[in-house]
Length: 316
Image (cartoon, rainbow, N blue to C red; front, top):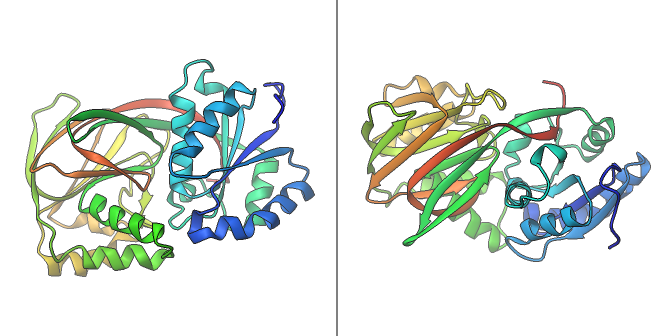
């Protein structure tokens, strides 16, 4: 692929052919036709394995690309963002990121009014309206090795991460669709055990609870449209935090419907917070997912990078 002038508006389109249980592979020809029809200048590259989008992003930054179009889901978007933020040659402010949603959950898109219709999403890319959003950075552990990851939507810990891990394994086996998450939400209850957590929010006195699940977010949605963080704003420089304390299995089942409109946060066993820096300890360790990607385990540190990324967005 030839190098481009970094000042031109040619999109490097990163396609994850496995997204949406290979829906991206099946639909890419139609998406490409729509891009050409609407005179969107683009070049295309395909991911080959997990983590490849991160590598492709860094490679194409060096070739001069500054506009990145994700054809995939939340996980592919997460990898592209990490490709941008783990290189230091070009400031993040010089990039524009867009998305044509083809994934299973497509939760990041919901906060930016990005339509699921390919035709409408392409028109949005052509129109070029942008918003600035915050970016989060998580430090965590993989066994005894410290790791870090950037994220643009929601990080889930505890039960949320367990469900995400099972869903990711299902997707690897070719089982997709929005009902997979719901199925795993119910089946994971059987053996799940609560943890004792300690939250440090902006240096205040620690918050200690027996915890079922924790969410730290920039956007409102995860799990395929569940509004886990109903008050979150993508550009306010604050993380929203939802802590669900120890619950009985029947209560969890009864409250699932209330996840979709955010009304579950009114339950007496749910607490919400806002902070710019968060530290979380737990006993035993709890798992982590970020933007749907299964990562490592506690302890965790969250750092806010306010208004760090320009993205294509629909009307608010």
